[in-house]
Each structure stands twice: as C-alpha cells, then as structure tokens.
Image (tube, rainbow, N blue to C red; front, top):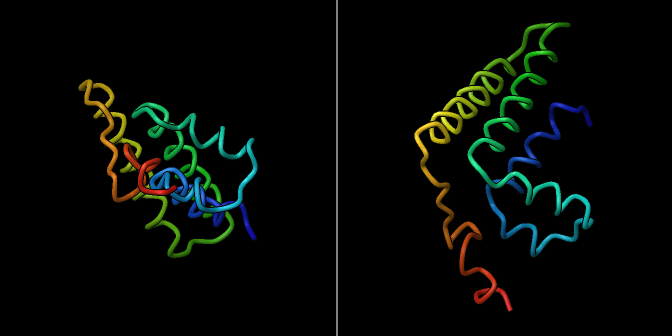
Length: 104
C-alpha cells in the first residue's frame, strides 16, 4: 500500500471517532488520532495529506489531483474556522459526545 492511500484510513479515524472504540487499534495510534481534535490540528493534518498527494503526482499525473485539491480545500476550511474562533462540533451519530453511553 502506498503512503498516499493510507490517508483515507486516517481520515476515517479522524472524522468518525466511533471507529476508535470498535476497531482494534494500538494505543499509540489512538493517542495520535485523539491529538487531532482542534480545527488547527485538523487543518494541519489535511494540509500534510494534501501535500503528500501532490508530491505523489510528480512522477505522473493522475486522477489523484482531485483528492489533493479537496484535501487542501478542507485544510483551508478548517484553518478559516480556527481563525474565526469557531469550535469544532462533534456529532453523536459519528461518535462524538455521548458515544460512551451508546456503546456499552
């Protein structure tokens, strides 16, 4: 598996915290994903993943350019939310606040 394809799995664990409870992952990985909880950290993570996608396009152009553009656009949106002082809002459906009571 190439490095740029691993970003999809990382995005799933970042955006759906319920997966950290139901998937058997290491404590180190769980700690890493839990650190990416603020808008600025998410903006940085998405910017890095977008940069990796763009670097993968150096050898040959492919449809991955769409993924790179959308990852960087997501980074910009999270960065703007951080600058505006908007708090990140989690959802019970995706595993945010209140999941501990739902998964027992």
